[in-house]
Every structure is written in C-alpha cells, then in structure tokens.
Image 1: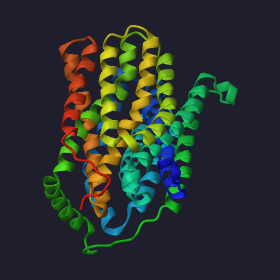
Image 2: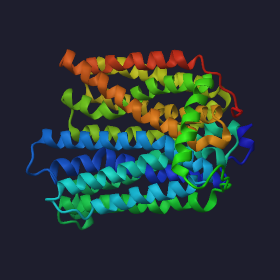
Image 3: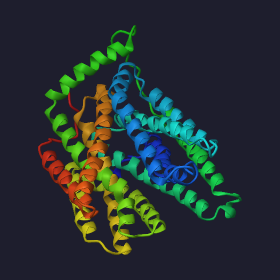
Image 4: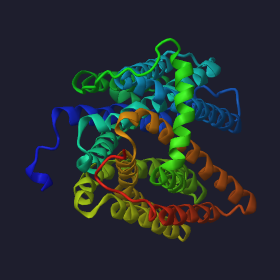
Length: 421
C-alpha cells in the first residue's frame, strides 16, 4: 500500500521543490506579469497589436531555440552525467534574466523582449533535466505519484506568488510602492530570487552518478552522432513512438485551453479581473487535486487516470461552447484545476516508464521537443478556426479532435511499472 511507505523522502521533496521554484516564472511572468508590463509599461509608444505581435514572435523564437537544442543537450547530459549541472546552469540563466527585467527602463522595450527571450529559453531548457531526474529520485512504481506531487507543488507555489503580485498591482500603496512600475520591478526580481532559492535543494540532495561514455574530444560531434542513433532507436521503440504522437496531440489541446482561456473569456465579454481570479482558482485547486490524483492513479493506473483527464477536457470544451455566464467560467476553471496537473504529471510518468534508464535526458530532450511542437498545433488550429468564423466557439470545436485522436492512440501504448531495455 502506498500510504504504508515513506514515499516523500528528502530526495523526492527536493526534486518536487524545483516545480515550486520554476512555476513562479511560468505563472507570474509568462502568463500574467510580462504580458501586462509589455502592454502597459514598455509599450507606451506602440499600439496593442504591436505588443501582441512582439510577444508572439519572442515566444515563437524561444520555442524554436529549445526545440532545436533539447535533443542535443539531452544527449550531452546523459554522456557525462550532467543533468544536475545543466539544470543549475539553465535555471540560473533564466532566473538572472528574470531579475534583469526588473531593472529595464520604460524606453527599452526591445531590451525587455531580449531578456524575456533568454529567461524563457532558460526556463524551458531546465525542464528537460528536471523531468529526466525523476528517474534518479524514485522507483518506477512510484512515478505516477511523485510526478503528480511535483506538479501539485508547482501549482501551489506559482499561485501563492502570483496572488501576492496581483494584490500589489491592485493596491501598490499598501505595500509602499509609489507606482505600478515599481510593482512590476519587484515582481520580476522576486520571481528570479524565488527560482534560485528553491532550486538549491535539488542541486544539494539529488544524487547523480557520473557516467562518461565515448570520446571526450568533441562532445558536440558525439552528441549529433548519438542523436541520429536515437532517432533510429525511437522508430524501433513502438511504445515510445506511438505515445509521443498521442502526447503531441492531446497535450497540444491542453496547452491551448490554458493559453486561450482568458482570451476566450474576453471575447464573451467577461471582466479581466474576473478572468484572472478564475486563473488563480484553477491553480489553487490544482495543488490538492494533482497531489491526490497521484494517490488515485497509483491504484487505478496511469492510462486510466489520463483517459479520465482527457474526457474531462472534452467535456470542458463542449460546456464552454454553450457558456454565457461568468459563474460557468469559474466552474470550468475549477474542473480544469482538477485535471490540468494530472494530464501533465501522468504523461511525464508514463513516458518515464517507457524510456531506457541510462538515456533519460536524451529521451526527455525529445519529450521537450514534442511538447514545444505541440504548442504550435493548437494555436495553428485556433488561427484556422478564426479565419473560418469570428465565432469563438469554433476555437474550442477545433480542439476536440486532438483529445479524441490522442486518446485513441494512447490505447495502443502498453504501460508497465518497469523501464524499457
């Protein structure tokens, strides 16, 4: 029985705290603070459309950079046992770039975009090595619980810090700030410090054997050779190949629901303050829900738990199509909070059981690459739907096939509690 064992060890807690650390960046900076600052502080001489265009291109650029780097970095990390080292390096790059955003003047919007790009690359790259370290902290039979535990702490940490930042934006004088600009600066600096501080337990308490393989003369050249070999391997790993295709589809739907939720609510005429509050609801609910889902799926099984989450997303899309009142948006935010972390955590744990243990960073590099590529298909379908009709309901209709086809493909994946050989 899961409850009879001490599952949350110091090593596991240290690993999960990194989700607590970097989720502050994901929620506060990526989702709320930077878009607000770019639109209202660094964008005073430009129209809103220009701000959206700039943000879109920087987001695309960071995704493309990580998409290209992820497999190569994964190979190098596996060759030399560099997971923790790369986790530290990219986290520090991201955190320091975030802190730098707090010192950029109002006229330097281009410089702000540059540091935002660097911070985003640091954030997304660090998750490659964080995900792969799951295999260093627990046994395969506990992957579901531990993976969900990490996501649950991430939702809680991110929501706590964002709540503080939103409170400061609403009442800056209460906290001794003279202007909103000072609040923006504090928010960026506090996220960077938060990220660095809660990174440290993973660096100090997670053990990683140093297993150098092959030639040390040209690690980049060796990495490309290994990458070509890995691509050939994936073709032979039927489970991995099918899962990655399924994951690419359904996680694209999940990320698009998250990404488009506020915009969809705005098009229905809901207030921005209500929409941000709904975002906080989903994250605060995500903490206990994702944690308990880890217990639940330890007995139910990861695939069944993931199926349940995907069915819930289909239901959310169908309900949202008919939604007319803000209270319905709150209810849907609550439901998304129940299953958002589960869909991400279970996907990570299933993938961890499928891949070879000694090539975890290499294969999680591909996982990260597929995740970034998935972030393209959803918005692309949204754009196509928007050209067909100005009715926002078409946006949600376009996502349902991603969940359905992804679920069907998932049924062909054989999942066990043992690693691939």
